[in-house]
Length: 259
Ligand code: DGL
Image (cartoon, rainbow, N blue to C red; front, side, top):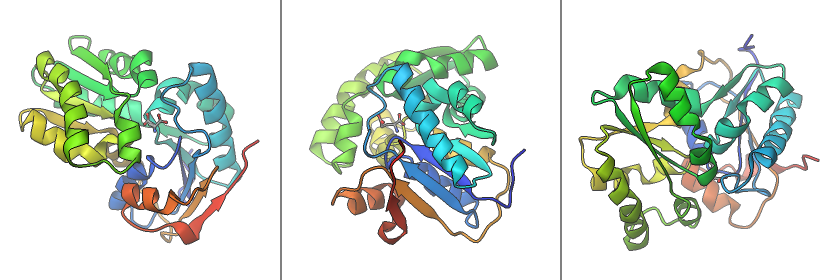
């Protein structure tokens, strides 16, 4: 059972999960959020299931120790590969982005053709495809790993020539699928949603899985008091956090060791 009087715990491989915090705050401005970004070990998207499970369980247990009432796995890779392991490791309810994104996509598609883009690990797990097929076996799903997008976005390349060039390489393939719905299956992609939209046009519905999980959380109460933890803090931290969240969290952030 979700304890509404407790803060909500959110974890990610790094700071990308702050895009999910942003969505939670839009719907539940009063929510108290405890965020953990495993910045010392990002990326998860290039790693094996075993390692992603190991890291994710450590992340979730840390949040549980902070007294959270529920955990949101903001990271698509961790949601895809480690939801089961995390759910078994903690006592609090666990929400994740794959189920939410799959439900939204299955409801949105008219042509029954859905595309998914994400990290190599997320795409390799076929978690979205499995989630969508469970809801409607008639839906045809196309998946594509876009490994160049995370490092570019992390470097602040969210507009301009370079990101548009890389995107056009990936979206060329997406266009060939003739889907009417595309899942942005990575914490970082909402930052380039406008670019994706301008390349794909208005006939493709874009699903932001972070927004979808935020919509599916029960109403959260609290005082809007947030706490942020990271496993590494470099001088770039403030800038990157601002990029994903929209405001500064430097004075609310603490570095922690998980092991
Ligand atoms: N947070 C990850 C995801 O949503 C992207 C970054 C990484 O590879 O760790 O899949």
